[in-house]
Image (cartoon, rainbow, N blue to C red; front, side, top):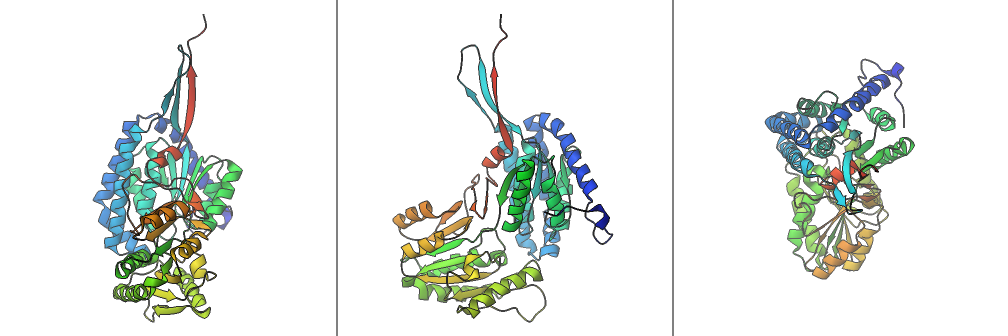
Amino acid sequence: MTEIDDATRTDADPMPTAAELGAIVGRARKAQGQWASEPATARAAALRAGADALREHVDELAATLESETGRPAASGREGVLAGVGTLDQYAELGPVHRGRTLHGQWDATDFMIPQPRGVVVALTPWNDPVAIAAGLLGAALVTGNTVVHKPSERCPRTGVLLGRLLAAHFPDGVLQTVSGDGRVGAALAEAPEVDVIAHVGGTATGRAVAAAAARTGAKVLLENGGNDALLVDEGVDPAWAAEQAALGAFANAGQICTSVERIYVHRSVAEAFVRALCERAERWNLDPQPLVDERLRAEVDAQVREAVAAGAKALVGGRVPDASGTVYPATVLTDCAPDMRVLREETFGPVAPVRVVADFETGLREACADEYGLAATVLTASVEHAQRAWRALPVGTVKINAVFGGAPGGAAQPRGRSGSGFGYGPELLDEMTTMKVVHMRPPGR
């Protein structure tokens, strides 16, 4: 990881210097003890006030996000409100986060109590910046940690606005926002005074973060890339299955952590499924959403072109439009082979690569043969197949007959190249705390 050299800073590169970052982490460390000593209800009240501030400024946040990433304001507004709901949830869960008593000797008291870990660095992405940051920040703050948050350099103004709205309700130094690119994230990850590094983003960066933490001893929470599979079994309605596939692959232009990245469809329904999927892709292309920038569009297009050159067919989309902007069309690829990058790696764009399989067992086996482990979806009318699939798929989340959704309070642990540790839900409170065991007896006589 590359350290920041103070001498390289220019007016065109307004990132904080190494000395400034050190001071920021130092303020977080200084503020942490007092913040941890506040009653849990007081910490929860501050978090709830921050949630109210985001709710009041939802349109401003959504408009800022649209100007930076192209995400339509209506969709961005949903993301902000999801973040508000997460903050409200942690404001409720924080005060009831509890340890347990132990049964030992009659004259002794034994208990286990969770305590904050200390200073948390949160490195968050651009695709859903408020909702994702709200989870990490909310869980860390309500349990008594202080936070240094670095939002993605692709949406710095959104991150700064989020930080300003929240920080106004916390004591000085408890929540600080830092702008900058990967060099800033690298310097924060290497800071010896940091106790937890929570990263949501690309796999390569996540591994670099883990390597830095191995040197400092910080705890690491990682949600990295995904290559989520969708299995379409025989016996399902192909039109309904295509609707689910299109939603999973094309929503937010495929820029969702758990987007559908590869599709395995049973040959008995493949023809009707592909036909219906192409129809839905054409509908999505009537009102296409942009990708975050030209760099991502070039990466998506490169994967599609490689697949076509290797024998895949682009039935819909598959090429950069002539118009200006960063739009890439919803694309349906067929005749995809397992060795193609479009099936092996995360595309993070509106691409639906389809592979026809002879039977459910083949589709399940190929879906399992992947280095990532974020999520997967199975569309089936067979309870037996659903049971076998959720047990076998080596991912943190399995969805049966719905590409998106889940009950409030759910959580998951990514696996493999997709990361480690709980990134949301009540279990994130456990990740942000460490357990202390106390054995207490009266003094001897």
